[in-house]
Structures are given as structure tokens and as C-alpha cells.
Amino acid sequence: DSGVTQTPKHLITATGQRVTLRCSPRSGDLSVYWYQQSLDQGLQFLIQYYNGEERAKGNILERFSAQQFPDLHSELNLSSLELGDSALYFCASSPRQGAYDEQYFGPGTRLTVT
Amino acid sequence: AQSVAQPEDQVNVAEGNPLTVKCTYSVSGNPYLFWYVQYPNRGLQFLLKYITGDNLVKGSYGFEAEFNKSQTSFHLKKPSALVSDSALYFCAVRDSNAGNNRKLIWGLGTSLAVNP
Image (cartoon, rainbow over all chains, first blue to last red; front, side):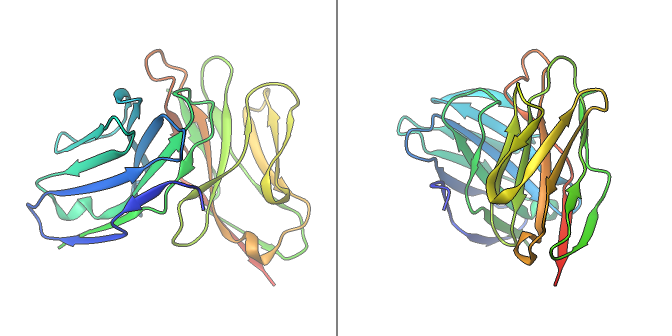
């Protein structure tokens, strides 16, 4: 158990809908990272937050947004969902903002868009 | 362009034999390199990292990795494979571009199958 929690574990929704994925980092970790994992694209970095502020951006679509709250939990919002958004979404956390720290991954949220 | 390559999609090895999972990288400056493992239906777990110092890095579960600057490689190794090592292995390197140095560049993963 990494100490990172994600909810929900599974989510099934229809095209065009909006969903919110939630992540609680390990106790004491200030950085949160979001990743998308799919069979055809592999593991894609989406975005990083550190202590409430955006720190790095990856291949995140404009339909997707994220934020980190004062209690350090983070939410990833996915809107106008398309079939291609079906994937595993992982959250990870690390103590600081440097990428030389190892990241601790949550169990993931499996999103299915029908 | 900065990149990480895992040239083998799948590696098969017999239990008890040594295993190697290959990783090569291309970054400017000093590389910070990582290996992670993903077991079925689980999140990724950190195995080991190279930041500086000894080229041979020891990590979790008996794994080690050798940093080779001249060959720009960071291969993951284990002297004696276990069936329970069967999983997906990811290599990653820190993006050293200004403004992006907090994110990792990930390989596509190598599926390791250890046969009894």
C-alpha cells in the first residue's frame, strides 16, 4: 500500500459527460501528479501540482483540468468525454516538487466511456 | 529531443535465471533515471533510481540497475528471477529542458514473464 488513495476505483459513463476523479496523497507529500494509461498510448503524464500550484504540464487535453486543494488532495476533471478517454487514470505523490524524488502511485481509477 | 526507449516489448526468462530489462535514454545534461514496476491491476511501484555516484544501483526486491554513461543505458537486472517478478517494467528519465525539469519522461514499458 503506497499511502495514496484514489476514488472511485471504477467509473462508467457516457460520451459527452463530465466526471471528477479524486486523489489523496501520502501524508506529508506536497506534490501530486496525474497520469493516463491506455493500451495504445502507454503511460502519459498529464499534470503536476505542488502545494496548490500547477508546476508542470504534460499531454493534458483542454477538456481536462485539475486542481489541488489546501488540504493537498487533488481532483482531475474530465469533460465532454469521448470514447478515446477510456483509460486508467493514476495519481502519484512525492514529498517535494523535484523530479529526482520517487513518486508513489495510487491504485488508479478505471474510466470507461460508452 | 529527450526520450527513453525500452527496446523490448516483452522479455521471457526461466525462473532462477538472470534477467535483464533494457533501457536507453537521450537527455541533455546529467540524467536522473528511474525504474518502476506495475503488477496486474495495480499502480506503479518505485524500484530504484540513479541520481549520482556509484554506477551500480541496488533497489527493492533484489533488483539492481547499471548506469552506463557512454552507452546512455540504464538496464535493470536481477541475478535470479522469480515467477512473482512477472510484471510490467517502466524506465523513466527526468526531463532536463528548462521549465520541464520536474516531470519524468517515461518509456513504453517492458512486459516480463518469468516461466516456472
